[in-house]
Length: 104
Image (spheres, rainbow, N blue to C red):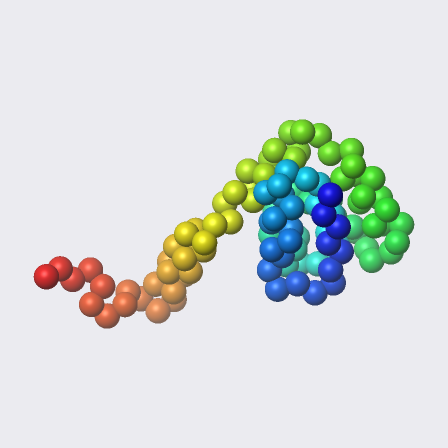
């Protein structure tokens, strides 16, 4: 199990790593980790200790199907996908790079 009740996270790499390993991941109610987890982590609804305990219990009861779905979700986080998505976003925002698409 990965316990990651961080209240500030820029991306959530430990969340992805835990899901890729096929273990339950517990996160706090923080937007970045929530987004990265895509509904596949066991999330605290508040920062209270009782919520951490509940999320851990839920994680310990995770089914093989839940862990497999989390692993599949995490598999989409690759450097190649990151580069492709960044390039597409920049092209949408800025237009094609000068000389892009030219041949010869």
